[in-house]
Length: 216
Image 1 (cartoon, rainbow, N blue to C red):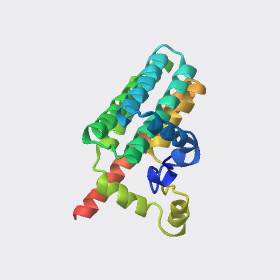
Image 2 (image 1 turned 45 degrees about the vertical axis):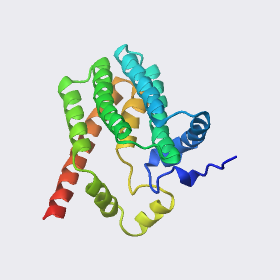
Image 3 (image 1 turned 90 degrees about the vertical axis):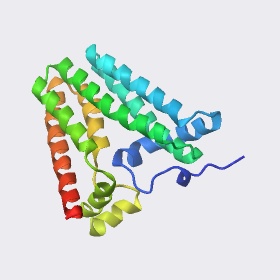
Image 4 (image 1 turned 120 degrees about the horizontal axis):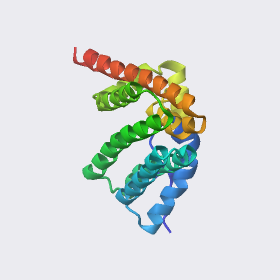
């Protein structure tokens, strides 16, 4: 029997939420999916289905159910990438599906959750717009540069030794927005929308600034 090693499908550095929490579940799930013959695309579709359930639950004012469905979808969203790396079944179509689905689902999740708890529509719209703008900002060069610039020296070496990125990022923000704040009530959701909007604005401006320096 082929031995499936963690190094076969884990990234050298990953988000704090993945490394510290989700990997403990997604790693055995990835191994199971590989053994039963599931494809990365099929796992992506299942993940999208769970997050669509979260959207429906938020819209129906069933916030705990929505939070639970979102966390399951988030977990499976990490499995599909690991499965693609493990089975060497990566594809441009699969990557495009995953990326476009993530942005569309983010917008729908923020809208359904924010409207459900009565957050101001301008705040919901601003959060969605800034989140999408930050995600669409040039990323290949920016991500490498930002990872170095935000974690130089001993801190960068320390986090790298544990496979952690220098600082928590978008995944952690999304988890707080859709997995945690719905359990704390409407005020927490609105406060999280404000905090997320400021985070997306800062990262968007930061990415553009790094691109400008690189191209200068």
